[in-house]
Length: 105
Image 1: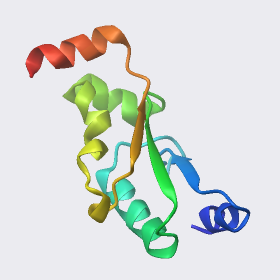
Image 2 (image 1 turned 30 degrees about the vertical axis):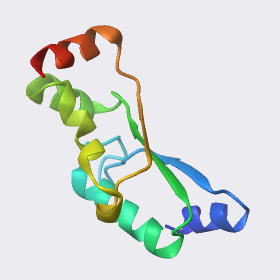
Image 3 (image 1 turned 90 degrees about the horizontal axis):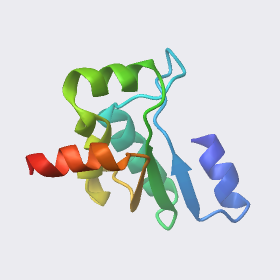
Image 4 (image 1 turned 135 degrees about the vertical axis):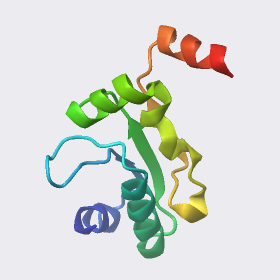
């Protein structure tokens, strides 16, 4: 949280974050991480705009996508702002993956 505060104090009002597993230092799909971090940032800096990443980088993310479908790495998009969600989610999904998800809707 100290990095977010340092950036905020330097005038930053838009922050893009990727969830990182503290044990492996790789990206994670942990909904709890997004919720906890989002809530804490909003508590300290309510006017900071958040953007969460949804990359396919790191062992945990890739294994989760392979085992549980593409949507598993995007589940944090379901978080409301009150529950730690972000105003924006960036997504590196390719067109074929988007089409596959869309065909299930």
